[in-house]
Amino acid sequence: MFQTRSLSTVLVASLGLAAGLAIFSSQNVSAAPEKPCTGTISDADAKENAGLAKVKEACASGGKDAAKKVMNELSKKAGLKCESCHKDNGPTYATKDNALSDFKTKLGK
Image (tube, rainbow, N blue to C red):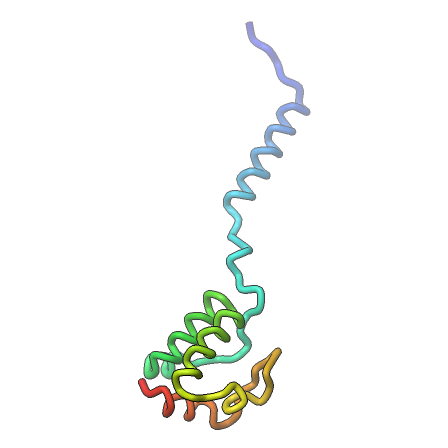
């Protein structure tokens, strides 16, 4: 025997399906860094210097927190302090004019 369904049942089922598809097809918002980087490292500088490439990669994947961690590791190896290259210690971490040249010189390739 054939049963007919009410319009409201079909509507509720359709909305549930649409909501489920929206959740599963949406981008993963949690993958975006909480604090995105504001500085820029050119592709040419990243190609030329492995340290800068690591910083750029950390920036892209984990934002400021990840970049800061990598920078701290590299700075220790080079004997640099944050204040050597940065005008402030947050939140922007603006670099001084000598930052790029010092980074390349002290860390080499």
